Amino acid sequence: MHTISLDASLWTNPTDFYNAVYDALGDPAALPLPHQFGYSVDALLEVMVSDGMAFLQPPYVIRITGLALASETVRRVVETAATLINKEQGDVEMSMVVDVS
Image (cartoon, rainbow, N blue to C red; front, side, top):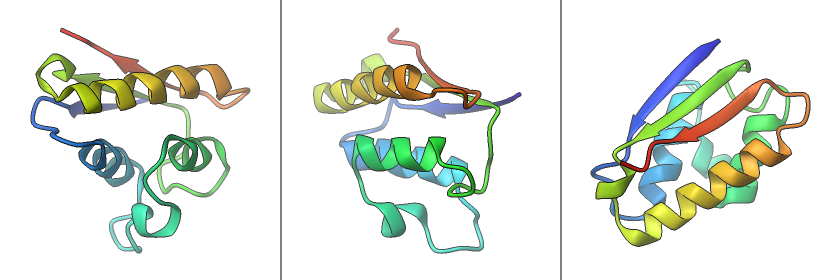
């Protein structure tokens, strides 16, 4: 299983979060994922659970650290995304783990 480690300590707005996740999942040679799907929790979930949408395919864990240093808005979006992704993953082997310290 792949582990994707992302540092949220410098994220100032939700776009920073989406860009970090999309960059980790996307194909560097292709059009960036945000331009294809948009910046929302629903779009991110679709990319993560739909077969073939992301370059990196499950199984994987996205581990986010440094969230306590991110803005309140970013914290809310990341926590909402993690809850929804972990709830809606179905039979797809992936999860999002958030370290709030």
